[in-house]
Image 1 (cartoon, one colour):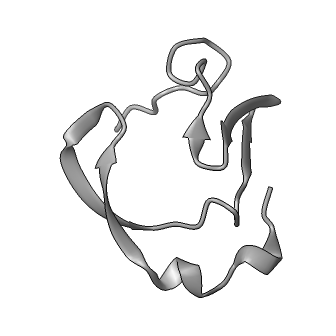
Image 2: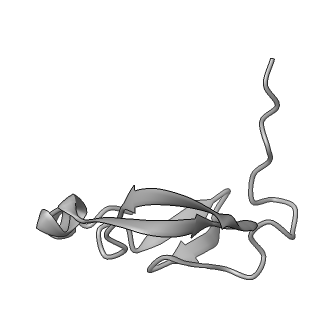
Length: 69
């Protein structure tokens, strides 16, 4: 779900952040958790305000890894 009023200058700020599961791998990201407050996968809440739900990556039904061909 996107909150259009939060698509603002905060998205211009780049910050260094660890990759989930590989915290030693750093990447630069531009984010505004208020712009996309909720992420739903298959009808289940996967993330709220940038915080992953406990089931993400641990339970079936929240997507799958796509293998390269």
